[in-house]
Structures are given as structure tokens and as C-alpha cells.
Image (cartoon, rainbow, N blue to C red; front, side, top):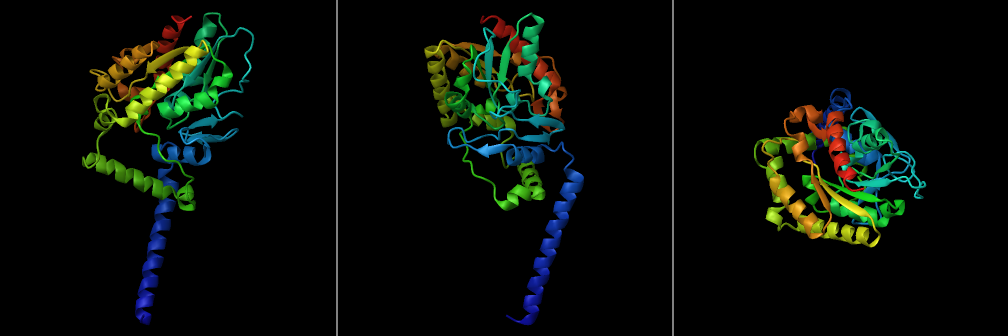
Length: 325
């Protein structure tokens, strides 16, 4: 190779490296303000989660980890829960309710005391009842993963009631899980660029918008992810009935719009599944009607429920739980 070609190649490599470094510094300095959803979810996966030995669980919270995400402190206890330390052993006759769910249940973007699990504890206390509401939510879980977690670990708490909190993306298949490589553990700009490309493709209709994506997860009840989720609900039902545990299946709506709710098919399929298993069911969609969706979000680009959203969920679930005494 001629000397000038080598020099040209070297200049190109150095230029690309300088550009990449410049983009990385720009993202870290000006984009990463602690409220960017893609970056915060990446930090959550990198710093708070670990790969599970069980493929059907996929990942779990790292015990005793802590991180500040979406402007709030997230502290994980010794058993991998975003909750205070709660022993497996029961405390006298104190009622115990175990919440299964994903980032909605975990309380993404809201302080610990504003999560609907802790709000429900306070609602019981206001009625003169000390209750333990255990938050086992983990971001990016789906129904299969939640049920498997319960059968592996959650059952040890010996709850009186299990609440399976279901949101429309819970029919997603269990994704493959692998530890990130060195670049993806440290490259802020990689995460930012990938997120921006995904957004652009959705805006150009190259990829499905959120509503179409959710509908395709079900295919009118035929999609494999939904069929597997139904099977998991059946497994959870069998365990609960065999151990005299009450089970509540709760539909938590997507927070993009409620009137009319565009995913009523999901509600109907979930309700039918609860009927087939002869377990309690509640749809929280009516409790959100009349609300401005954007005022319920953690941020303008993050449609997880904020404090107000968690309050609505807590009140609705508490009313249903009161009927299950």
C-alpha cells in the first residue's frame, strides 16, 4: 500500500474517532440531564439489573443496589425488591398482599413512597388496618417472567392475595438476555443514537406506532406471546388455589389515551382469561377517563404513571381489594 494511502486511512480513522468522541461528550454534557428515557432505562439495566439463572425470568434487580433514575432515588433491598426489608416470615395476622408487575409496579420515575404499593399500605392504615403490600415489580418484565419469579421466589412471602398487574405490552415474548459488551456499558451516544433512529423510523411509519405494535402482540388472541401469557396466568392460578391464596388480575391501561380506549380488545381477552380461571378481575381504564393523559406521565416523553397516575391506580386497586376480604 502506498504511503499516501496509509496516511489517508490514518486521517480517516482519526477523524472518525474524534467525531465519535465529540458526539459522546455532547450527549454526556448536554443530552444526559437525568430525565432522558432511553439513557435512564439503559442505566437501570446496566447498574441495577443482573442476568437471572432462570431463562424465563431473564433478569432481576441486583440486591442492595442503588441508582438515581429519572430524577428519583431507586434503592433495592437485599432480596432484589424496590421495597423496605420484608422478611419471608409473616408478622402475626398482618394481611399481606404481593404485587407482581413491571416498571409500572416497580414505580419507574416516582419516589418510593408515591408508588401505588406504598399508597395502598397507607390507604389500609387510614382504615385502621396494618397491611404489608410487597412490591416485586421489575422493569421490562412481562407476565411470563412475573409468574416465573413468583413460583421461584415470591411464594416464599406467603401472601394472602397476589395481584397480577397487567399492561398491554405484557404479551411480549421473553427476550434473550445477555450481559452488555464494554462499548454498550459505557457508550452514552450509542444508546442515544439508537433511540433517535427508532423514533425516526416510527415517525416515518417504517416501524409500527405504539397502538399497532400492541395490537399485533395479540392478533385477536392468536399470537404466541399472548397464548404463553395466558398459560402463565393458568399456572399462577393453579398455585394460588392449591395454597389458598386469592388472586386478582388487574388491567392497568396504557396511558396514551382513554376515550375511547384503543386497546379494549386487550381488556376483553384478559377478562375472559380471568373468567376461565375463575379468579377476580378489575379493569382500571374507567378510573382514568376524563384525565389528560400527558398530565399522568413521568415526563413529556415517558408515559409511565407519575405520582397522580400512581394515586389513581392505588385508589382503584384498593377499592377492589376491599371486596376480597
